[in-house]
Image 1 (cartoon, rainbow, N blue to C red):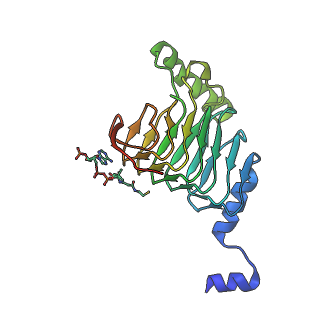
Image 2: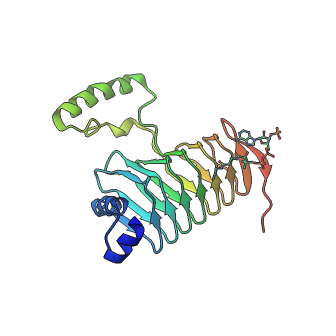
Length: 206
Ligand SMILES: CC(C)(COP(=O)(O)OP(=O)(O)OC[C@H]1O[C@@H](n2cnc3c(N)ncnc32)[C@H](O)[C@@H]1OP(=O)(O)O)[C@@H](O)C(=O)NCCC(=O)NCCS
């Protein structure tokens, strides 16, 4: 009934209006032809980082940036499902024809130093920034944080709850079994699973 009413009177649904508001705030978002942002999409992006999404995609994930650096690029015909977090300080790049299931995490940096003497400063800085600016990572020291881009090749399928850590390249046509933790490159046309992810099969292809 609501849908018919909307069609006749050309009004917009609450979710359409929410989506338009979200998109309007993203000054550096490029959306391709026929690409749909589903209701689960969120942006944590106070810095207007670059997000490019190609044609014929269906996207339902969270785009997260914590500084003015970081970029996310998605090719054509990709499906990225809800609850998936893409967190970038460097670059996370998806090719074409990729399927990503629910609840995955792509994290192109470590967030903190592995050296306690550097890490201990984070809490002081967070409290100070929260009080001074409201943004607890406004003046975070990123120089001590390991940061490396992630690349996902064409035709990759990533099962639910996978974790892809910084510096990983996933080769064309690879499949990641559910709940894999991937910290090394994955060869094209292989199936990997587990923590740490290991090859469990070779995949036939043309
Ligand atoms: C990756 C997957 C598709 C592989 O399916 P499959 O080809 O039928 O794999 P098999 O059952 O033959 O498993 C092969 C081996 O890998 C192991 N394995 C498969 N998936 C695994 C996983 N997620 N974690 C750990 N080990 C796994 C199996 O135990 C088996 O080990 P064995 O040879 O020692 O017995 C499937 O296991 C999976 O993860 N499915 C979830 C898909 C998903 O997330 N869908 C959401 C919608 S997009």
